[in-house]
Length: 357
Image (cartoon, rainbow, N blue to C red; front, side, top):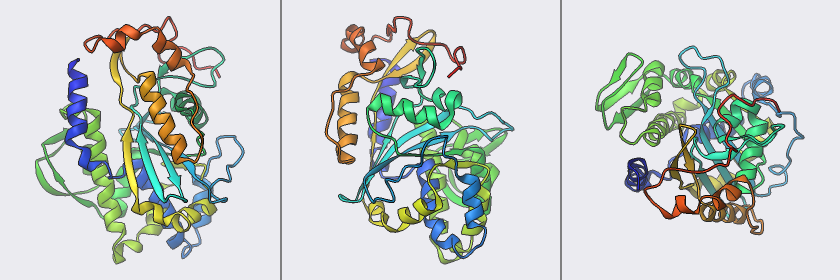
């Protein structure tokens, strides 16, 4: 077992009790749903949603309107911060399944470095899953996750990290307790309790390399900040900030969930917020073309696919995709815990070398 794998397993076990916390993109979506109700008090709500709404060129899904189980692909992109203007990769990738019949909501996290096929390219293109959003926007991200897990992806919501600073400032800052010293972009947050403004909160949320938990630790700090935002919005004085927050989110949030959908999320699916659980797609580290990837076994992919399909009220199906085909070539990789060599038979395309679709 390599060092990264051992560290990931220790981090997962250590922070299992945080599993019910909702991550950045989830909280943003809930803010939209709840905010839509209060947003009726402001005339700009419809215009705000017109700017946020992006159908990604596909026919609008009516699953929420029909009160059926549905899935949302949640994407958090580390763009819009530090002056970045590109769309960027989706460093946070989650599939949220919501079943109004069982009243269960399941958040399934997928590592950004997961080996996956980019569905929609003219030729075979296999690389890190987080590249799908950069190459083909939400349409390719949805199609690629659908192929990886064999589950329908009804909707998506994508938020840029650059919006975090604005969100925190819109609620007059947040109070957090840091478990470690965090230094990023010239800002230091020492261990202990602090009230952070937007710029400080962004730095606190983006640091990764000093954290022994790596990207997982960064996600936890993002959760911490956004949960603090949600807590403030739940107060009587916080309700008055919904209008400002909705307007603040305009440049940073895109979703194919309409205003009517958001209203139904906050009403017809309200009970689902009381029964939220989280899961992670467990994977093994591998070096491919000199880059570090996360590779899930066929058994793991099948198990997650079965769980997601059951949650959506669908029958189980045997998974068959590029991952399962490559896994057949790599029995030795999965049988040897110390092995980091994964044979892709030339299927992996280096990033940005194939962006026609």
